[in-house]
Length: 314
Length: 185
Image (cartoon, rainbow over all chains, first blue to last red; front, side, top):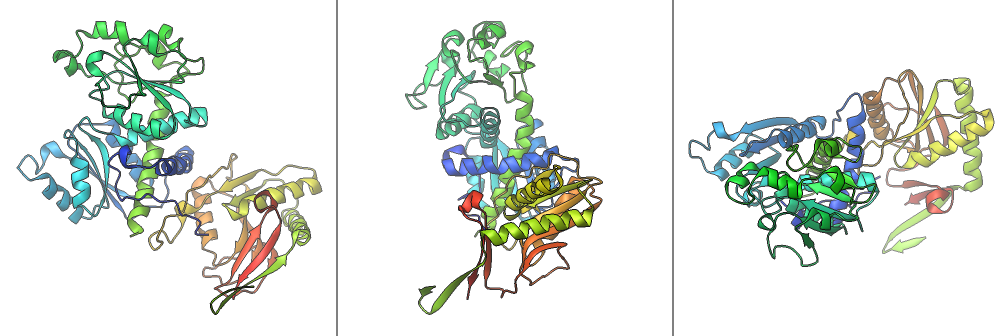
């Protein structure tokens, strides 16, 4: 036995940008094994017993934090949630002091979500513990992209060659950015659809097609990945009204029909029904939105497992 | 024989493909004899070495009894007792047991029985999946050197080995040939 050879190179996951295709595939392959655990009556394995995982969330999040918490618990780790609004940071403690104190308490893994891009990278440099980026500003949200890729793989058997449309506020979306890196690394053909105000010029490769019309952009795609519209963007002038947003870029039955007949609909959640997507489509058999939630736990278990392996490998 | 400086590596074929076929046939008969048929029986092959063997045993049982036995596969990476001391974590492979094991007689199948730690891990995994009425163990090769109180119910061949040696069971589905090879000093 001892047939391994496949490892993550770094003790941290701060961005999809830093992962090779082999590493992404390793995470997705490993997640298959963990998804089986989630189907059992006893949804627990003893694998990381005795390890400590800390959720350090500076931005509110119920679903991502809960997903990480469940993933960690299913692996038998001890989980601590730091709700930072109420803590030492308010008293003026620096971020690094907070993180090193958490490490001194015995944390093996720190999962961090912060409104400033680059925070996970800073922590990764200062901690021996593994750092997982759960969302940093408008930069990346790597585990979201990994679970999205896993969900697409599950449906289609592969990703290379698929046509994938990402729709909405690309500019402010760390989910979009991580997905673009991930899907392109895996060989998919990615296109972006949304208002000109919300799709940045020159940020991505020129061969990523940009459309400002759903009717033009959705033709023959295999995957329609909807992004969440944040209401604050309406107030700051990125789009006039939610009615107009829906009229031009909302995913309706008619627009979905432009995609391939077996196309799937994705959304990272939580959805704004009636603004970026209609209920009819969100609840249809083509929607894999709930699969994304389940797969999120399996993928996060895989990440926790592989990072433990990377740390022990010296 | 290959030489690496003064270090000789010898390989010896313990079983050829005909030997393996006869041994597997005998094991299938023994499983049926002890369990008085296939009622309530299922086979679970331990990844990776036990997977092909479990399918062969099921085929052999089918040709003897004329009845199907459910076959599953079990990965034990998540239950190993040595994760904290290994340099690398083992690959997590597929577990697929598409049937109920509670109340059944589960015959765990592995290619080589050595320290017994894999079997301990497999039993813990099975207990998290269901509550078998009984667990029995079938191995093609028992090479000795148990570190835990584990014993096999059905053994293809007992081979005395030293700890530094390796026993490899090859199946034609993967290696192109059926055979068992002993490698070492």
